Length: 389
Image (cartoon, rainbow, N blue to C red; front, side, top):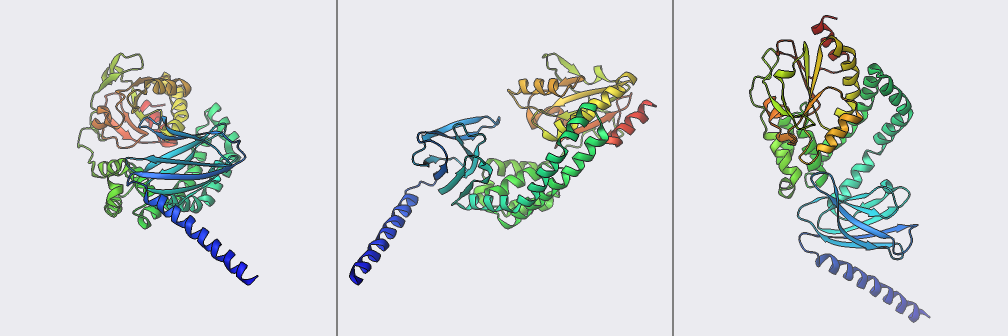
């Protein structure tokens, strides 16, 4: 009996050893630009279609590969040009499951009824992404609760154009955004080899209130692999950008510009000045801009009969004309609009030194810039002052 038990233990150890060898062999067979996904999901039928996707520069999801589910398991092996987020789409399951494409074997345990609770780990950046999500759970939970409790109030305020309530809700929601930014900054400092770090850094580099000297130190500490990614190059470009010293400061005459309107007709600033003119830099993809739009609509409705003019300059991307026009219609922006559809390379934005949006310039009746980037009650008070009402 003892010999049988010893033989059983020996065979079990041999089985484990063979399994580990097979796993290591699988990892070693991956090329430098390859990753492997080994995943499970319960509650879906065999042969359920599963699609591997990535996003292009326009935010569109492009299918890279597909497979089918077997016994609750699925696998992918694919190549990548640089670390990036890719996504897994399960047929008839809402949402997409993100993971970071980088060399190695990525283990996924997915839950069809709540993809956000899924576990993605196995490579360095995916492990760090999971750790970041767990660290931010408390803040995100508070934020979701706040949004759920105030959703009806937000909808009502938008319908009635109650800017006081809208601004109060935006201010309260910003506290939770600031908490997540703080977690992101800590991640950059502590994990210079994590893909999440370069994404955070690229985002922060575009925020005008951030200390670029500090951000540049964090950038210099990143791994060379991350510096050579698209977000790495984008972050460096933003950190090195110096706004041109052009006549777009308070007290100076606003530089004239022209661009096509939604109908394709080229119009200019000078031919559309009012007693008071707001130049509003925005874009259909800019969430803070879209949140601010109800305030601008209320302001325009209250003062357009007294001489207020608004000129919207969109920084939408090439081939996004439809999204731009749709946003104008949905948000009920009934003032003048123009766009070169050149994103951050828009010549008007460069002329005015715009590094982030929303951004506004307020002009008096002579076309002189009298204020910049006022919001809420401060903007309303300035417009009333200039119009003498």
